Image (cartoon, rainbow, N blue to C red):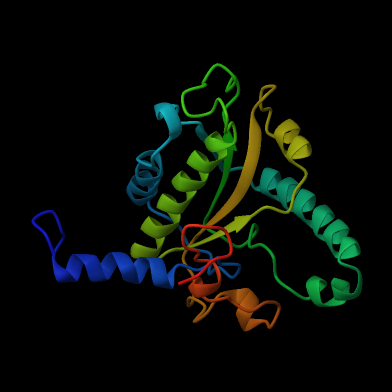
Amino acid sequence: MNDHAYSDAERAAIYRAIGERRDMRHFAGGQVAPELLGRLLAAAHQAPSVGLMQPWRFIRITQRDLRGRIQALVEAERVRTAEALGERSDAFMKLKVEGINDCAELLVAALMDNREPHIFGRRTLPEMDLASLACAIQNLWLAARGEGLGMGWVSLFDPQALAALLGMPAGAKPVAVLCLGPVAEFYPVPMLVQESWAEERPLSEMLYENQWGERQ
């Protein structure tokens, strides 16, 4: 504990939000109040970004027919993904992979266009703009959990097709379709664990010391 640490209760709340964050697929309709949505997006906008380039762009989808067209793109990719999975195809098709038509708010998170001139922190690692956008999405996710709202990150789509559908300029790239809103309950464990699709691996398997593959 040091002079800069938060109180016990504040720190517990942070770790609770991290531990209880879930990639949600089941939503209960409803609405997200404008001031609450504003707070969540402000939290996303406070994310760290390489060279302070702030590469994130968010598109709020308010047209119901546009939601439907986005959902159709996701469904088309879901089928293609199932075909690529071979023997796990049938099991995959039973999974619920999105809540686009059920969530209160739908957002598309994208990388900005004209990113090439930003070389601060990207000269050898140009993908750091994507890392910055991921940080913004995580901020939004954790803030939503703290507000009692669920969020799901949908990545099953053809980025070029979605970019065209949303009129994005050349160079801009959609990265996530974000379903946001009230839920009946949060999954007690990640949904893919709950559905026996995958098992979580312990941190000890991912932690090395000094050299790749070496552990304490």
